[in-house]
Length: 115
Ligand code: 5GP
Ligand code: ZN
Image 1 (tube, rainbow, N blue to C red):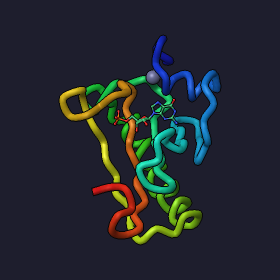
Image 2 (image 1 turned 135 degrees about the horizontal axis):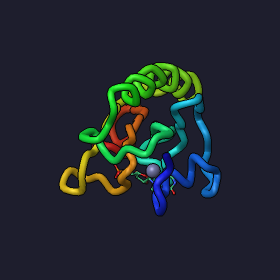
Image 3 (image 1 turned 135 degrees about the vertical axis):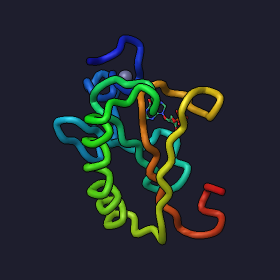
Image 4 (image 1 turned 180 degrees about the horizontal axis):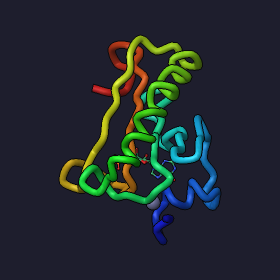
């Protein structure tokens, strides 16, 4: 179910444009608008669930089934030396969009934009 006023639900619905990296029935992945490193990608469930504390097991299972495929695709395209996978939950921990998402951050070495 889409939530009103959720940027990521609007991206899934195509109401806000995005650079798609991957899509299946349950998951959507797209480039972060603010690329911390080259290929910085967000992976989101199509269900609107706010954070890890709301995430259903079934949603998590769909999401994590897709993650290795997306990571491998990013490896192929951007050829990083490594990759961080991060997730912020609630404002206090740095979450700014309240639709669950994973950050896939390809890493290229020192001074690649992420500490
Ligand atoms: P958070 O801070 O919640 O962990 O991450 C939210 C991420 O969403 C940020 O890295 C931010 O750049 C990204 N973001 C916010 N609005 C948009 C948007 O409209 N399009 C895209 N592609 N990314 C967005
Ligand atoms: Zn949403």
